[in-house]
Image (cartoon, rainbow, N blue to C red; front, top):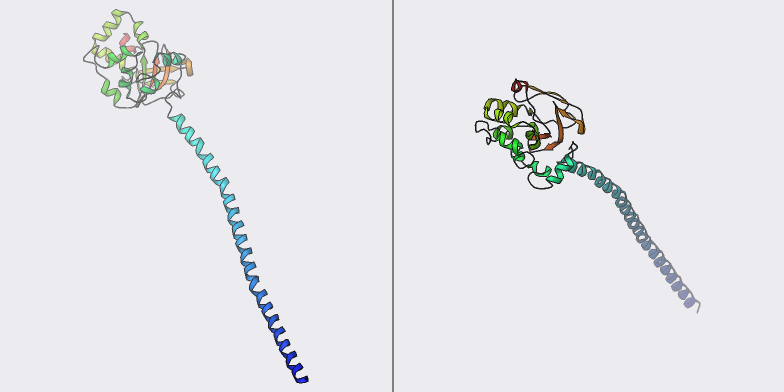
Amino acid sequence: MKTEIRKTSSLLGIGMVALLGLSACGGDAEEPAAESDQEMTEETEGTDAEATEEEPMDEESMESEEPMDDESMDESDPAANLVGASCEAYAEEVPEGDGSVGGMAEDPVATAASNNPMLTTLTAAVSGELNPDVDLVDTLNGDEFTVIAPTDDAFAEIPEEDLNAVVEDADMLTEVLTYHVIPGQLAPDEIAGEHETVNGATVTIEGEGDDLMFDDAGLVCGGVMTSNATVYMVDAVLMPAAAEE
């Protein structure tokens, strides 16, 4: 009996040891899984934090681009630099089409002027209609200029006899017309001063904004853009000294 009891006790002891060993092994196996879960959680939180930090950068990039787009739009607006008390009246008379502010910006200056109903006499003078020996269309369309453009009302102020005398003399007509043309494009904020014209004489421009004066001619509407020139419509025809003598 003692021998059997001892055997039974030994077997029980071995069994307990085995169970304890299995428990220990089971505990060790679960710990890496817990650590793995913790690492995944930290990685997920780190990714979310990076995504959150990137969002303001994207917003700042979008905000920085918007002013550039607005500025580009302002620069492309042909009416952005208009000056003259009668610009509003011009816009009302020619609100759209080839002769409007926007329409003239699409064509070279001689072509643009021919579409403007306020500049029909000037157009006839530079295109050979008044005198077939005076055709300046290719010259005006072929380079960059500032054009002082007398309106039809300005030509109407000249006595008919005097106007006919100028028109019939090709040299004199050319002198008068080229006196209204300055090489290069001058914006309203830089046009004041003395400028040599295409005919070699000097035109004097004084004042600023709506009060600009071109010799003795007042501004109707200026800063009108064409594809190659800046136009200033005026209320009188300029006469160079040589033409007045």
